[in-house]
Length: 64
Image 1 (cartoon, one colour):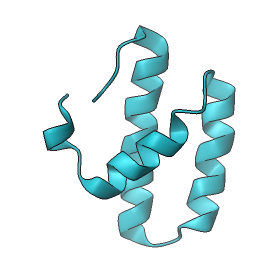
Image 2: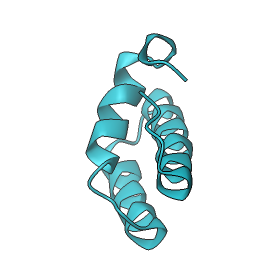
Image 3: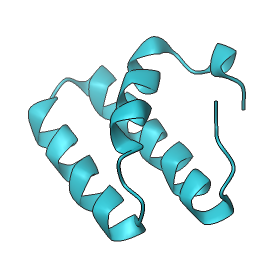
Image 4: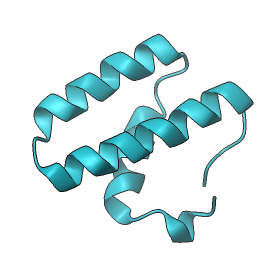
């Protein structure tokens, strides 16, 4: 996936989630982001960022 297909909000959350190096940490960080950003649009962006970061962790390949 190229960065051209990732909207700015999702990209922002993905960059924040990049600190997570393991799935357990990713889940904890994602839950915190969801609590801090209750808007539905933000929740959707966080979910997509989680999927992208999970894929990065498992494959070792950057999404952007």
